[in-house]
Image (cartoon, rainbow over all chains, first blue to last red; front, side, top):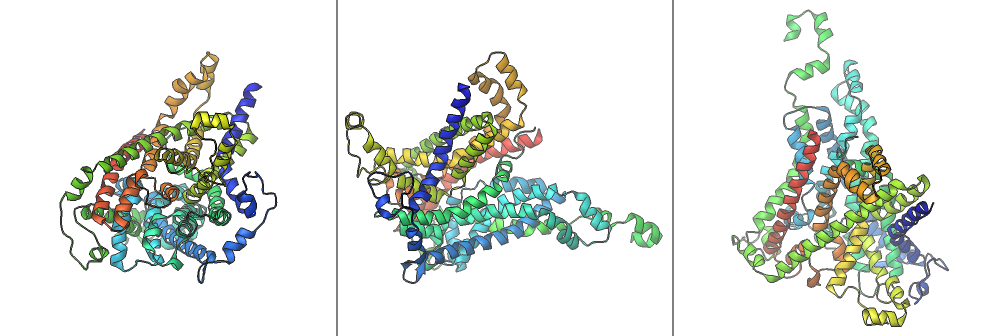
Length: 277
Length: 328
C-alpha cells in the first residue's frame, strides 16, 4: 500500500514538472498586469482577463502590421511545406514500399543518414543558395528550405503506411483493368490518407517551429514568421510578460493539439524495429 | 510479341497487367523517387558539400555570396585560425560537456519515468503520460520563453521562491538574502545549468515514452521470476530489463547525443541573441561568426564543418545499430 502511494506520488511530481511550464504560460497570459508583477505570485489568476490577447491581436507591432499578419505568414509557409512535402513523400514512399529495385536499400540508408545532417550547419550554404536564386527576403525561401528538412522523415514514416495497405487490393484492381494511375488514385490513396495526415502534421510542426532559417532569410519585418516576430518583439529586456505569454500560448496551442493527435506514430517511427516482440 | 505467337485466349488468361509489368525492367519506381531524390540532393547534400567548399575560402561580404566578387582561396587557413584560437577550445569543451551532461540526465530521468509509467495504474498512467506529452509537444521556442519568465529577476517564480527562504539560511548558503534583481543568466555556469534544465525538460518525454514502449514489448515473466528469486529493483533492472532493452537504449543515446550537440533555439532565446560569447557552443558560434557583423562566412563554415564531422561519427554508430537490428 505504501509502495503504491509512493509510486503515485512520484507520478504526480513528474506530471507537475512536465506540465507546469505550460500551465504557467496559460495562467500568466490570463492575469492582469498587477498580478503578474506582484511580489507574491498567485498560482491561479484571481481576476482572469483577456486584455493581453486583445492587446496583441489588435495592437500594431510595427505600423500596419499586427500579430495576425505574422500568424498568417507562418500558416502560409507551413501549409505550402506540408502540401509539397506530402505529395513528394507519397510518391517516394510508394516506390520503396511497393517495388523491389536495385538501389532500394541504398535509398533507405541515405534517408536515415540525411536525417542526421545537422541543419544548423546548413544555414550558411543555404543562405548562399537563397541569395543566388534571388529568393532572399521572400517566404518561398523558407518553404523551399523546410521542404528539404521535412521530406526525409516524411518518406520514412509514410513508407510504413503504404506497406500496411494489402497489396492484393491493388492487384485486384489491376486485374479488373484499372490503370496504374487509377489504382494509385482510387485504391492506394484513400487507404493511405490517414497516414498522410499524420505525416503532414509532422511536416507542419517542423515548419511552424523553425527559427534559425527564418531569422536569417527574412529581412522585412512584415514578412517575419511568428517565431522570428516573437524573438524580435518580445525577447527584449523590459519584457511585457502578459503579452509574451499570450503570444506564446497562441503559438503553442496548434502544435500541442496536432502533436497529441499523432504522437504515437512518432515513437514507432523513430525507434522502429528496435525491439522484436 | 508474345501476343502474336500464342492464341489470343491463352494470352489474355496469362498476361494480366500485373504479370506483364514484372517482366521488363520497371522504370516506375525510379520515376516516383525522382522528385524526392532531387530535393534531397539540392537542399541537403549539395549545401553539405558547399559548406565544406566555403570553409576553404575567405568570404567576408554578401556580395561575394551573390557572385559579384571573387572568392579568394585560403586552403586550411580558416581551420588553422579556429584550431589555434583558445576561445574555440573553450567552446568545444562547453559543447562536449553540455552534451554529455544533458544526454546523461535526459537518459536517467527518461528511463526512470518510463519505468514508473510501467508500474502505475491505468488512470494514473493516462494522466501522467498526458502531462509528459505536453512538455514534449511544446515548441522549443515557447518552452524556453516560459522558463525565462520563471527565472525572471523581479517577478519570476524562482526569484520569489529564493526570496521566501529564511534570510539566515539563504545568507549562509548563497551569501545573499535578497534575490530581487539577481541575474540568473549572468553567470555562465548558472546559465548552462538553466539551459540544461530547459533541454532536459524538452527531451525526457521522448525517452520516457520510448522506454515505456520497449518495456511493453518484452515479456514480463523474466522480471517477475527474478523478483520472486529475491532480486531487488536495482538488480532486476540491470540484470534483466536493461539487457533486453539494450538496442532501444543504444538508439536513444545516439539520438539524444545528436540532438544535444547542436542545441540552438533554446540557447539563442535564453541568451537573448548572440552577444554573450562566454556561453557559446558550436552551433551558435558558427552562426555568430557568419552572420553577426562583420560577417565571416568562411570561418563560420569551417566551424559548421567541424560540428558536422563530430555528428557524422555519432551518426555512423547509429546507422550501424539500426542495420544490425534489421538483420536480426
